[in-house]
Image (cartoon, rainbow, N blue to C red; front, side):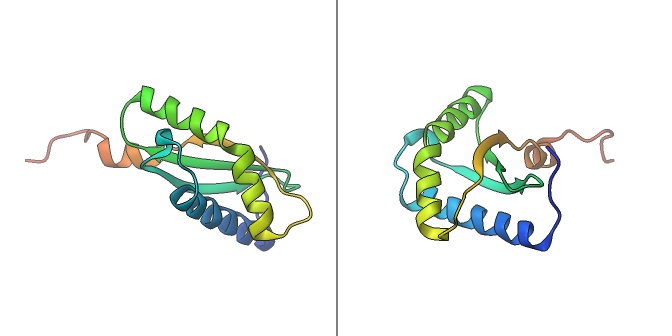
Amino acid sequence: MKSSGSRRSIRLADLILRELATMLLEEVADPRLELVSLTGVKLNADISIALVSFTVGGGEERRKEALDGLTKAKGFLRSGLARRLNMRSLPDLRFAHDDFLEDMVYAKPDHPDS
């Protein structure tokens, strides 16, 4: 997915991230989405697709549950975004687990400190 780097798309991605995080915290009651943190949103060049990155504690099974929960809540989240952002057309939401933070926190050092 070729992402757009324009100011408009960056501002829109930040706004989408903030609104989705608020909805997850305040409106979504799915237990699979407890302790899910949204880490970023990337929009493609024509702003038709929003790739939403998330992290969640636990193993691979927990990640799969969170992804299933987010996918199931996609319609609810899009309709909530439509109400909140008052946009003519909204990007399609796609979700992907973000390994970056976990790799940084849980990575084993290459060499032990002495």
